[in-house]
Length: 296
Ligand code: NDP
Image (cartoon, rainbow, N blue to C red):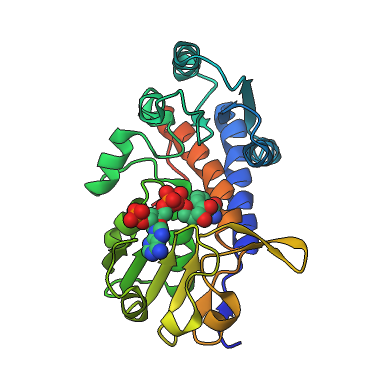
């Protein structure tokens, strides 16, 4: 293995420490405690784990955590009413509705009911538009975490060719926008892309956000490239459950210059960036300066 490992766990701990320091200052100097409300519908085990972890890390950073666990068959009107109350609650600076929502609910309608200033997931149509036009917005947590790691590793990204595999609204598209904002030349690839291996081999920065276990082998990676593996895939190996990324780690690490592992790469950065976004939202709501290095 030749690639440097980009340690998301360690980086996320640094981000959380920065968040906690800033929260301490907000409390001491302004009597302000940032608050994050998380709304979870149903009993999907993976979502429950995420929400528990978000609540725990929010409290550890010194912020207020408000959890709303609703039944799977909650009506749209009831959910919209809760969002309306949270929008108007001055103690709540960030609102996150855990996705995916049950099939009877319209996700776009629900997400767009959140006050854009409290939309710490960055999925509201206003934030999407602001990001797309290079204006100050709430930035989706996973791509924000990826960008932070890339900036930390490379410094200046300008002129690099970034290939983002995946065009979802929550990862691929905002990732591409952020890389463009840092003056990369950006290609977005997807399931209809012709000759994906050649496309990947042309990347100085390769971001994989597909959701297919180990789909990208080492011989799709340009020697010396930086590989950011967003994928989280549960597979069974030798009778045991294991998490793997969208990139075949061993073969890619043999040629890449740097690579994020799964687990321990992008994953921990996502919650750290959620905390960072909540502090940013609290500062903006109160007309206070935003902490350095916690957003773009
Ligand atoms: P989506 O399913 O929404 O999007 C997947 C994208 O991959 C689509 O654009 C799809 O193309 C593309 N794709 C699918 N198959 C291929 C293929 N064979 N070749 C090229 N492109 C393909 O997934 P998400 O963006 O939500 O998530 C992607 C991965 O990232 C998942 O593993 C998810 O678990 C993980 N994830 C991790 C997070 C973290 O915190 N680390 C947070 C969010 C997601 P098309 O549009 O043409 O169908």
